[in-house]
Image (cartoon, rainbow, N blue to C red; front, side):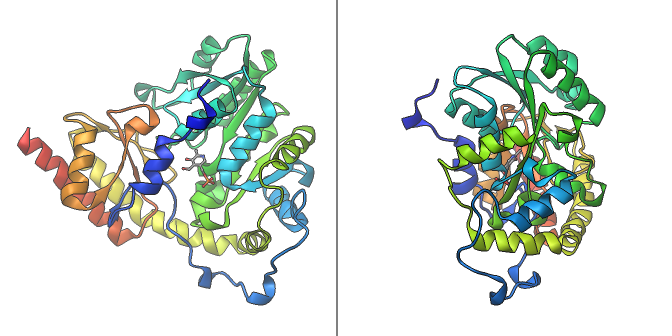
Length: 364
Ligand SMILES: Cc1ncc(COP(=O)(O)O)c(C=O)c1O
C-alpha cells in the first residue's frame, strides 16, 4: 500500500500546473459558462443554510433528473469527491478493486489511498475500447469487491451500452461485488442521456456532476446515486471530510439545474462546431490511429511514428499548444485531445498539432 505521506496524483499535478496553453487541447470539459448568463441575483444567495445531509431542493432536483428518490442521492464536491465517497463506502482496506485499463488515474490513486488492492482488466483499442465482460470475469478474484468503469470512458470517449453493463453487473453480483460507474461524461449526451446505471440494480453505484458537460466546474456540483443504505453510509463518511457543502454553491447549482437547457444549448453548440474539426484532423493524418468517439469531449489517438513525449515537448516549445500525454492514462503511445474549448482556439490548436506532427516527420 502506498504511504499516505507520499500520496499524490501525477495527473492532477500535470492538469493543474502544466496543461494551460494558449492553444489548449488538454482540457476534458466544456469551457466555463459565464456567471452573467445564469439568472442569479444577490437576493438568490445566502452564506449559510440547511445543507446538513444535503440541501433538500438540490437533492430533489437531482433525484428527479436521475429517476430516483432523494434518499438515493449524495451530493459531493464534484465527481472527484463523489468517487471518493463511493469507493470508501464500498471497500474495506485490503479488499480488491478491478479497474478498467486505460483509466483515469485518480480512480487508481484514490483506491490505493483507501487501502484497496487494484487490479486491471483491459479495454483494447483493436476492440474499439469496448468492455468485454469475459475479460472482466477472467480478472475477478474471490477478493474483488468493486469493479470500476467510466462511461463515457476517460480517456477514449468510448461508450458502454446497457447490455454490457448488465453483463458486468451479473458478474459482480455472483461475486458479492458492486459496480461503480463514473458517468461524468455521459452528461455530455445531453437530451439523449442514457439512464444512470443505478437503475440496473442495487449493486450499481453511479457518480456524476455538472462539471464537464456544462462548463460549470466551479460549482463543484457532483453526486452519487446508490441504494439508500449505501447512500447513508456515504453521508456519514462525508462527515469526516467536508461536513457541509458550500451553501452559495448549492443555491447556484439549483439555479443551474433549473436553467440547464440553456446551459446545455451552449455546450452543444461548442461541440457541434468542434467535432467536425476533430474529425477533419483525424481523417487528414496517416501518422495517427484512433477509435473515433461518437459523443463526448475527448478523443485518444495513437501516434504511429515518433514519441508522444517528443510531440508534447515540441508543441509546448514551438506551438504554444497542450495535449495530455497518454502515459497519464497508462498508454504512453497515445495522447488525449479535448474539444470543449472556444471554436476558433480549437481550430487553431488542431492546425498547430498538425504542423508539429509534420515537423516531427520531416526531422525523423
Ligand atoms: C472520469 C472522471 N471522473 C471524474 C473527474 C473529476 O470530475 P469533477 O471535476 O466533477 O470532480 C474527471 C475529470 O477529469 C474524470 O475524467
